[in-house]
Image: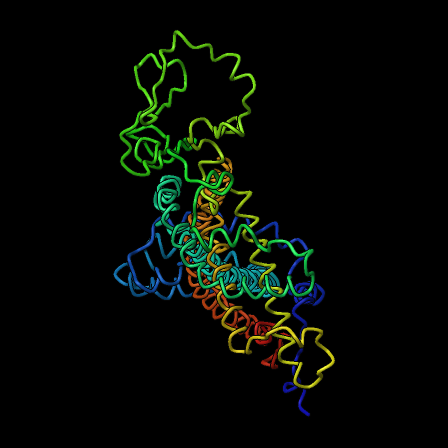
Length: 508
């Protein structure tokens, strides 16, 4: 093989050392670079307006090969300054020709070009690729965060709307709407009390079952539930004393409404003036059993009654008992048939009686489930049930009874009812519930802001990556060109032998 055709392979990492070891450049070549760079900076201050020069100088480190291209362009722009001897009188041309000669001295241009090539391949191009990859990864992460924030915001908003729907409010003025809903509780409780009437067959069956099992030892079953089924949602007073009160004076409810300016006080009045009127009573609210100064007398018929001043009744009354006299003395605290405090609440509203009713509903439900199970299995095993002599209900009837109990229990223990009941009887609960709803709204706002911020960061990262991609493309193109120029210059020094720089830009 002809020696001129043997390629020269140079590793990119050893290019500069190779040039020094082959004595193409001096070991101290860097000392001559500052002077050349200074001349280049001065020459750049006076450049003609030319598109090729502007493109050549844009974002690039000026090297020897750029100087040669500038000289070629100046030959066109400074052609008028050329004399008969082929020299140019233009100072611009003289400056760039002087720069080229300084570069060619001791092959300074070759050493500097090799340094630029190594720097671009080892640092500039990988750094730009890494930065672009980082921006693209940041863009993907921000897009994922944006999607997650929107999803969480929608979930939190759904939870807020669901809870508002359970409470029957719009969620605009939370505490006020909750307090306003308390005015609907009496009507809701009355409707629930009326809807309990279908429970009577189940209660009767439970009572018959208990009487059959216990006989004479049987007691009244589900007394409170039976009372509500028969009489509806009456007051606790009527349940306790067996008669309706003459008037009801419920305790006022004090709830501070701090989520808006209140035109009226924060006290909620459930009823007309705090007193319920059970009919038109012409009698005075207070019954006087005293000395009767008002002059009211009792007509005892055609009985001659002696004047009071002539009769000594103290001795006779001492021997008369209250039971024999027929006078009923009301228990202490039930002043004249007025229901106050807990007694003024209805059975479904009072926490104690409400819990008893729920417990008795659960008890009745458990009994009906057991009877339904025994009825379904008695056909296969007649010895299983001990109640063969007890009149039994059909499966359909038991199922209907059980459904009625479950419907009643679901109405009374619905989330809306539980929340409203707790709001009325626990002032702190309304604050906790309001804070919970406001926290969900605040979380929605926060997630919305975070989603917007993530979208902005994603867009910014995408824009930065888009700006860097053309820069990377331009640097790669110029690095390829520089590598080819270096290979060509080295080849000239070895009589045209092919030169290959291994590990160069072609492998990026």
